[in-house]
Length: 283
Image (cartoon, rainbow, N blue to C red):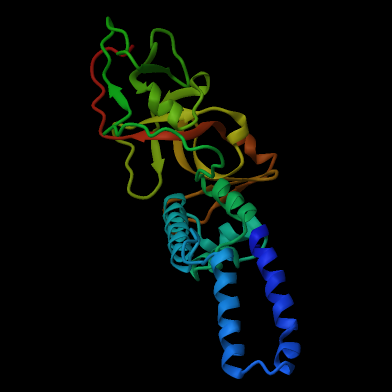
């Protein structure tokens, strides 16, 4: 859409153009006729402006499409879910991620729905302040007689036992805030099984977000079954719950509303730390 000045210029161009036959009948030579046309075009472009300064260019669109594709591919791998399954769950057909892989950018509502499904962030709003880089947001092995350092928050166990106190790990408050976590809904757990690729359950602590509203779509969750805590990919779809195994040869487990009582979901995994040598008395 042109600016008002450009629109006015366009009307002037039309007025002169329509008057050309009359001018030619008054013996306007061909060379003067052509010069007048070029002059009119120059004035119009000068007032309307060129497109070379646009922010959205073809190259920018290609870069955005590639960033979108890379984020989706990584999330599919982390969540151990196929492109076809994700597309079907989000839009009801298998073309969504196929289009993304082909470099086509879906509508905003479809991207938001897909990101929610894959556990990715989709954000509209003012620029958020940058958070200083941290090699790890957690401090482990807090001594019993010392409080958490300034700027850090201790986390209670998801399943408290007498004399156990809080978990021996404190998390940076700035990290918690940057990830839109709510301290009152954070709990810690020591999983017995980590059922995702490339992970073991040795010396592992999971930070859980226990908000019930997060129990939808697809994500990494911690649940208790037969007395053992497991971290695995889970899909919530209506009254159906699907437990995904890291082993490709194992078929997903489908739990209907009646069978859902076999497991107890503790929360969505917000952080998973491994190789933490828990020693001594815990807080």
